[in-house]
Image 1 (cartoon, rainbow, N blue to C red):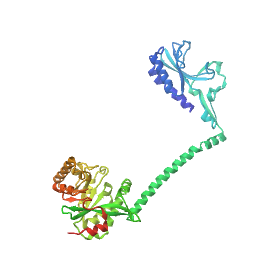
Image 2: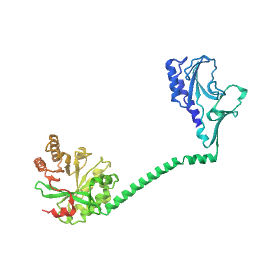
Image 3: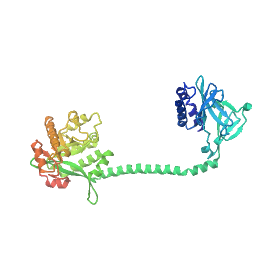
Image 4: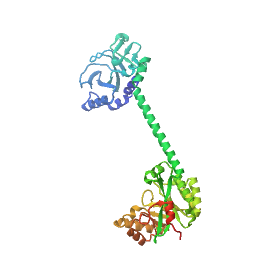
Length: 436
């Protein structure tokens, strides 16, 4: 600690030379700069200016005087200060041929060391300085009042008392207990997060999260397909809203496991035997696209229906060969839809860079078309764009007859929304679905 105090002051030598290289008798601006240097250096008590071998200024009390003093660069010790009557340590820097700066150190404080023993500084084996610069022994060579030295002449001593050290440790135990408490809380949190993820994955494998189907209808309101949604069913039969668990599943990258589970439950149901013309769409992510188990589950379902995988990305694609992977699915009769188009990361370049078969217009545009002219223009433009790109348009969020009639007028032939059906269990869907 004390050596660092020395070094901080000594390392400012070049700063002093640069800032005061042209100084003679300090001007007002020079005086301000010197005071600023003192305030910025916590280990410096004051600075004196020696010009042409005369003291001409001191930041201590702003006193101007012309006491004659031959200056020599380096470290100095004065055995007794005229102000404090204690030893003072100073450091002299020559900033130009006529001007020297004498930087005074603040008194050394060994209070931290003294908690576990005692500390002091020895200069050339004859001068010992303790806490608050209290003079312990001061017989300098030749008995001069001021003597120059280098850091090679300085030794730092710390005498450690084991009893005091133990007492200091015990006195500070609360800090360690606090750190231990924080460590335990952190470990508990991380463990609970890990166990929570394991538990959610277990629930997914046990089919606690079940497929709910929201029908997709044509212009005659015949059911032609359905979007498979996830619903968490409790032991009491209560349905937990997806907004309470889907974000967590996406955050923990459990989406492929959930998608595989939903596909497996659909595949094992009798729905697969009712119609090969039924369109079944599953929400999909980039993680699902490269998951081997999801790919295998897709290959099982595809021969029994028109399987549509809806990309609902909450972030841009990051993998370099998404397009190639999509082509692999396409070769096995699997289709892709760009879900919630016009929101999030579904930018237009997705339609040019990747091969989609369906475009789903987000409900936020549909719910405003009855009273918002801008929404009308947006939907009309999206429909025209889809026709140009030969994409089939499915409109989500249809809740009124007027909305359905307006969409039908613009050429949209497939709809999904509460006006027709709400999401329902697999059994309920099979009760109302009639192949045609």
